[in-house]
Image (cartoon, rainbow, N blue to C red; front, side, top):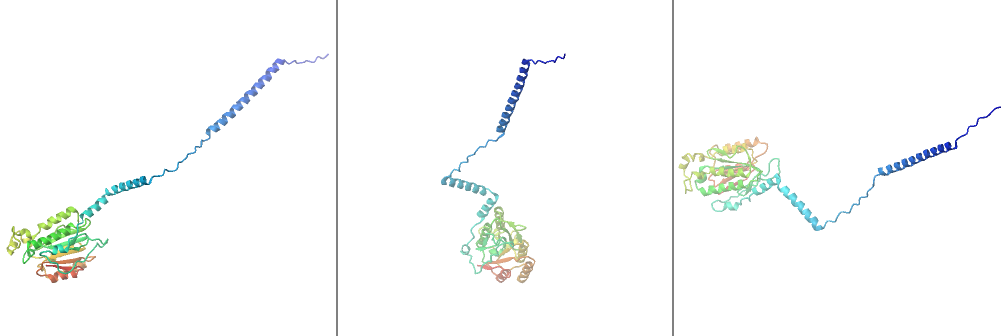
Length: 327
């Protein structure tokens, strides 16, 4: 007889198994929910905040305040510009310029002006067309200027006096004082020898002009005159002090003036040259002109001259200048 075996399951054991499965499922659900919540939170955290910036319209500046601000800026700019080296230089140029002497001032008293006029001779070859600011007996000169002055004994003899030479000297001083600071100049005095203030053309700074004025005065033939005397005599030129005032070396003085390379020469004398004939000097000047790239203007002044008028007139007209006779 066959007997079938029957397995009897414990009901309590089955209940515990179902409960375990339910708990496991519940835990997974909870973990899933937590994971979803964490993910959503991270996304919200990473999202940038958008802040709207409200830009207020610019405040309206009152006209009076705006005007004050602009004026202050202009004053600051003006102060800065005035402190610059260029501005200081421009101010120096302006203060160095002195009003040109009037011809009528020179013509009063002893000296009278004859007819004639100077050429302007303005500007360097590279040209801004500007003059030097200087005048000589009321006439203008160019930037590069050489003044050639006769200091021979006859300048204070034969009707010429201390006073008449002093007038000439003062006119030269006025011309030098009126030079612009960017002008170049030199001075030559001549009698027995030719003497130059500097070895080349020099810029007309205030210190240089002061030195030039002292230099001119040191060559005055009036220094040889005894105190209280107004007119010289031949005996004075035999002394050591008077030797340099003997003769009229016009040719040498003109040659030395050309060597300085000016644009304009102002030549002042009271008579005929003694170092060469008038014809020889005029020919030499023509040769000197031919050697230069640009012609030098020569203005000639016969100052209370007893002779040599024809020579000085030709010297001027042959060289693009003007002749003036002052009596």
